[in-house]
Image (tube, rainbow, N blue to C red; front, top):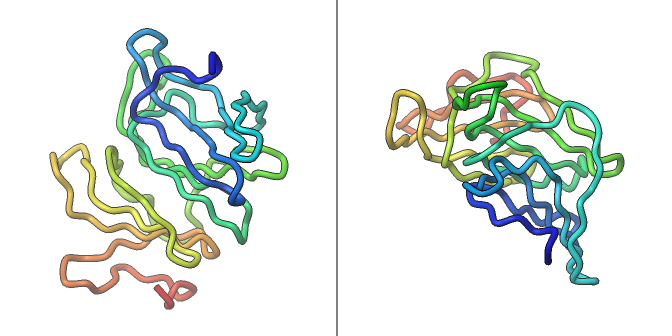
Amino acid sequence: SGLLPPVTGHTLTLCRNSILLLIGGYSPQNGFNNKLLEYDIRSTNWSVRQHTGTAPTGLYGHSAVYHPATDAVYVFGGYRFYLESVSASRELYSLYLPGLSWSLLAPSHGAKPLAHFFHVSGLFRDTMVVVGGRTETEDFSAAILLYHINCNTWITVNQTGTVTPGSRCCRQV
């Protein structure tokens, strides 16, 4: 389809078992993709979706998961285009699907993790699990980060498998 830009470094996230959301990406011809594209699996059509709120602009090398209980997509890290430069991001965004409204999330407890890019993430129950990738200080990161969605809290798992620092709310990880 003519709507689908030639991009790399984007995410394609399955939502509600019937739509795929394409977020971010970059191409030398078009630069950063700032459109929110939706592919309807049933109709096999692409569409550009209008959205509101604080959207992550110029995103590349990030990760995204869909959380059915909140009906939202959570987007973490990557490279982000800021005004005149590109830098690694440690930001977490949510896209609430019913209104297609973006929010920039600040953790309720503790600090944001280091900026990560070219990592992967998956969803385990109510936790976004972020693994590997790169940071500004590591070419190849072995880090495992956990974002507990219901508590709005980041947790870093150390190399021995224990959780540090833990949130009282997030004991079931």
